[in-house]
Image 1 (tube, rainbow, N blue to C red):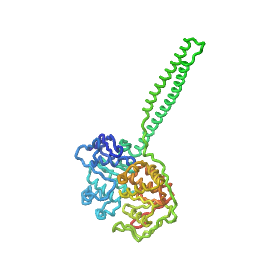
Image 2: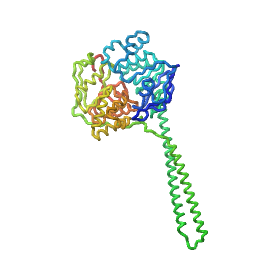
Image 3: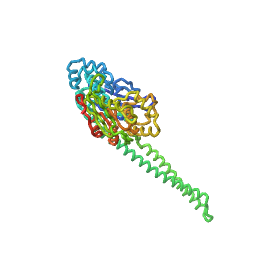
Image 4: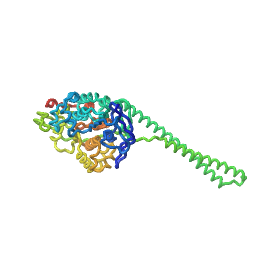
Length: 500
C-alpha cells in the first residue's frame, strides 16, 4: 500500500517567521482536505509534498519509492504536455475521462479563449489520466460552474491513490476527504472526518483552550490579590517593629519592652515568609497560563464605506456581438444596470460570463470609483495596488487596512513588504487586498469575477455579510449559488449565445 510520510518538516524564509514547523503525518490512500487561512502555508505544503520545494528541515518520503506524484496548481495559464497527451489518447482511461468531464480535443485549438473553468477541467483530467500514486490539487473547483463541478467531483471520487486537496469549496470538503489537515500557526493537525466534523472539533478545542486560559488568569489574579494583602501585612509588621524599637514607656520594664520587640519581630518574619511563598506561587500560576494566539479565522466585521453614484444608470452596454478572441460568445447584447442594483451573471463555463463582465467595465471607461476584481490578479496589478495604497491619504489607507484586517489577514504583511515583493502575496491575500481597496475607498460599484476564489471559508462568510450590507451596485460572477443568493437579487443568464 502506498504511504506518504512527512517527518518534522519545517519551512522558513529569511524575512518572516516559519511558515511550517515540525510538521509530521502519514497519509494512506484516500483524499485529505488541506485547510487554513490565507497565507497559512497550504500551497507551500503542497509544493513540499510534490518535491517542487525542498523543506529547510525534515523530510518527505513516498513508500514504496519510485511512485508518481502530480501537482495541479491553482492557475492554468498554458497547457502542459500531459494535456496534449490526453487529447491524443483514445484508450479506455482517456476516453472515459474526456467523456466524464465533457472535454473535446478541438478546444485546445482555442486555448487562449477558453474560460478558466474549461482549462481547469483539462488540467485535472490530464492529471487523473496519468494515474498517479499521489494527486495534489490546489483549489480544483475554482472557476467551475455547478454542473461541471458535479462531474469533476464524480471523477475525483473514483481516484484510488492518495489525494490532498486545498479548497474553500464546502461541497468538496464535505464529499471527498476522509480526514482534514489543518495548517494553523505553522503547525499541521489532522482531524478525522469531513469539513464540518473537523471544524466542530477544532472550535471545541479552541473553546477549551480559551476556558483554560481564563481559569489560569483568574488563578493569577487571585494570587496577586493575596500577595498584595500579604505585602500590606508585611508593611504593617515592619512599622510595628520599627515603632517598638523607637518608643519605650518609662514605666515599662526592660523585659516587657523586649517582649514587644520579639512579638513584632515574629510578625514581621511571618509576613515576610508569606510574601515570599506567594511570590513563588504567583510565578508558578503565571507559568501555567496557556499561550493564546490571535485566531485569524475569527477576523472581524467589515464596514464598507459608500457614496451614491450621481447617475441612476451606472452601466450601459449596447453591442451587436461580444467575442473571446475570434470566437463570438454573445450576440445582441443590450443591458442597463442601475446604481444600486445587485446582479449575478450566470451561465455554464465558456458561455461568456467573463467576456461580458469585461465589456461592462470597458463601456464604463476608467473610473476610480469602480472596483473591478478579475478572476486572477497578475503580479503587475498587485504591485499597482500596493503603490496606490502607499500613495493614499492616512485616513484612506487606514480604512483599507481596517477592511483587510477584518477579512482575516494581518496588515503588517502588507506594510512590511517592499513594493516589488507584494506580488509574492498568496492568491487569497492578494484578493483580500483588492477587495479591501474597493470596500475601503467609497466605491460606487463592485464588479467581481469569482470573488470567493482563493479565499478561506471564514473570509467568504465575512465577505458575504459585507456585500449584503453594502448599499451600492454589485455585479457578480460566481459558481457559489449560496453566496450569489445572499448577495444578489437579479440574474442575467447566458445560454447559447444569448443574454436573458
